[in-house]
Length: 32
Image (tube, rainbow, N blue to C red; front, side, top):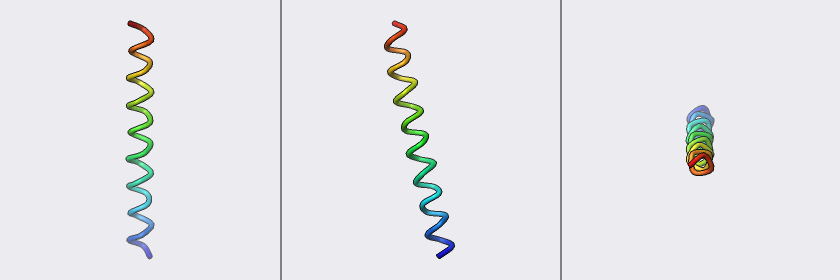
């Protein structure tokens, strides 16, 4: 159960990082 919690935490972190990356990329495109 603890392992499952850690796994979902890592997954959430990956999703957040992906969203931040996509947001930054589109923001840079808007600036250019």
